[in-house]
Length: 289
Picture (spheres, one colour):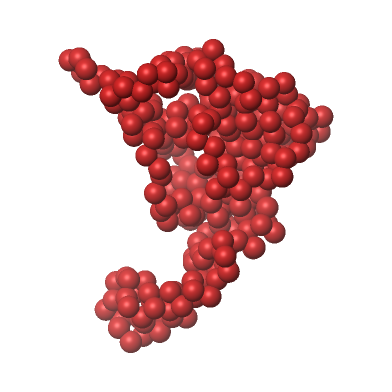
């Protein structure tokens, strides 16, 4: 459902389905930019295959942002009893979820689901609830909200630019949570599930998965200062710690510089989609390591 245009040359959609949003392939996305940075344009063009990690992330984000939508889409597969029965019959089994009995039981459950409904396990449901409660208790996240008070919350709004920029590109972004005041964008909150929310571990994930470019891209498109982008890292295992991270000045500068380089590469490829431009950046010359 389209709402209104709040910035010049920007369209805003309050509720755009995942399929409709990802079908907008004429628009450059954060995922595409990160794919180019991590490998090549050719790699970024490949569709992302569904996985358990992506399903869990989708469920977590939906639970955090819209409880009604969560319960409509996700149905808990109550498997504790069947697992207990399998282990009682075969106590030597290391992975009861890999047995034929379990798979048959799960298949029957999934066949009973309605259109667009997805099953999640009891363990994942419990995990998401622990993560949500952890985020509510986190003092750093409370401070973020206090910084922009009073504010409105826009969860999973979709934003599309309507005119090509100097690279002849148009963009789409869908921030997890946007804090706004009188339709003015103030800050972005991005939920990240992880195994370890400690500074050292999350910093490794930050560069491995190119979260720096994600933040730069979102803030560039929405014209928000990069220091107003916050990652909320929440552990998906006990003790379910939550930590909040932002970007220091040097990281901001480097990310914006690299973003412009990547946008230039994408723009050049769009104008001339040759094998030389679609492949690895260093594929056509000897590169010293």
